[in-house]
Image (tube, rainbow, N blue to C red; front, top):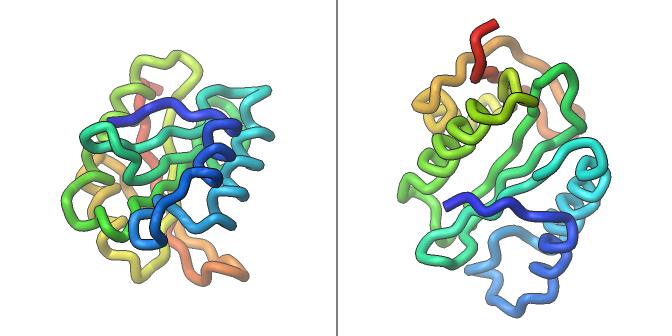
Length: 152
């Protein structure tokens, strides 16, 4: 379900013809994620993962900034045509399991919009807890989540 994905792989997704309905992310988002992965890959890899179902791409997970002290900040999204089927939850469970077996990772963190109840449920079901709030100029009020994957 999760396939490690490089910045180059993300750029190639931009060249793949598909309808807007089945695109895993808008072109601007794919470009931003490819640039972000390209920045992170020299210090930590994989920097992104493709979420697949039956061999087809349906979403993405990404590290959102270079890891510090074993903390991976993640973001994720599932294409609208594939939402509501538990894909994000299953993919996040797989990522948590991967993180448990990678000695470089101590915990995972994520942020959700205060009103994004679906994403909050995905995080909660995968053992994340709210550790704070912050306000972002672009995204508004955000909940900050964290899940330890090793014993401290």
